Image (tube, rainbow, N blue to C red; front, side, top):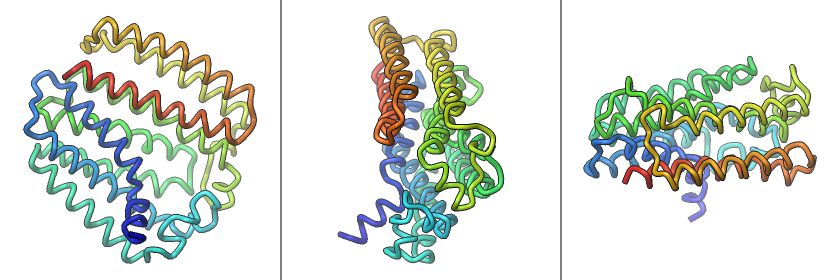
Length: 283
């Protein structure tokens, strides 16, 4: 049971489930979807995401060992050796790719593109440039495209371009919120962060306005052909206002680590609600 628990932490199963949910949202958003490929999509994306997360921990385990936030992860803590973790990562990536082949070759190519962007570009650039968050953000934009193409959609259609853009916009503040909380640890471990250019207050302002623009963009869904039911659109609009209010209050009127963690959780919860709403609207 202990090894299984370590493997689940190695593949970051919670993050992988969130990635899978975004892929499912893209799948159900496609007007011509049926349920024939959804199991393959869910299993394939989860495995591929888990494999990429495990590979990331293999790449960064020495730096992870230097930070309180990450030193208890399976590899730096010694629960799984780097070699074993690499084998697990390759296995999950290969398995996920083979499963996705049951949907479409485009979905597999998009899945492999996420691995290239995350492990080959984002992870490599993190110690060198604070702009590594850009390819990192693109990684979050691809899973809905995987779901969309698995259902039979084209990447040129405006609906999926909207969702992919929304996911990209939503990824960026996550990186910056982590920098506010753990910036010193990241710097000591040798990662390049935005703190080299901006102080905490400036980063908070960047996060708030970026999130506000993202929320406004969310309400533009009908312009991209996503026709939300009236009650759902009104609910999302109202939730937007509530979220902005809470977000501002917590972000600027509290300096405690607990409140900053709450901000991070709120952004994830809100995005989960939006993705579930898109799925509900399409079923």
